[in-house]
Length: 126
Image (tube, rainbow, N blue to C red; front, side, top):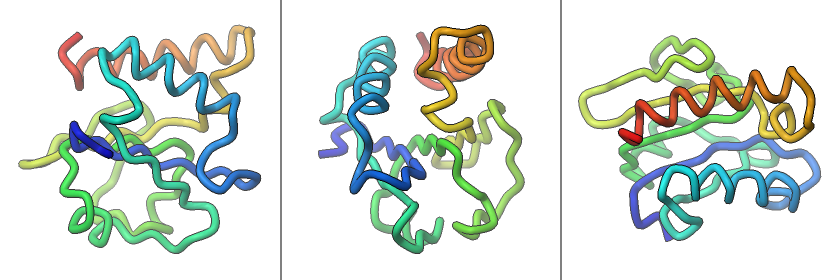
């Protein structure tokens, strides 16, 4: 439904939209941000050609979070760094690693989750 104008870009090879494990993890992230699935649009970029300008026109989102998305492949017109929100005049862009990299219960996954959470706190004023 995208009630809050938030677009989540993912790159999942084996799912039409998003696999169950990543969906459950994403749902927990959203709840921590005081959001739910109705507040966002999820776009799986794996099997479709996605262009940033088309996305921007289609969704008019205020927040884009890209999980393991190749900036050049979607023709992103600005440079980004992982876990450093890019603030434009009318939207925020966050580049993050794949959701898969955050699911396991190990130090690497915990570090990824921490980086993401620190950014989300800034973006959503938590």
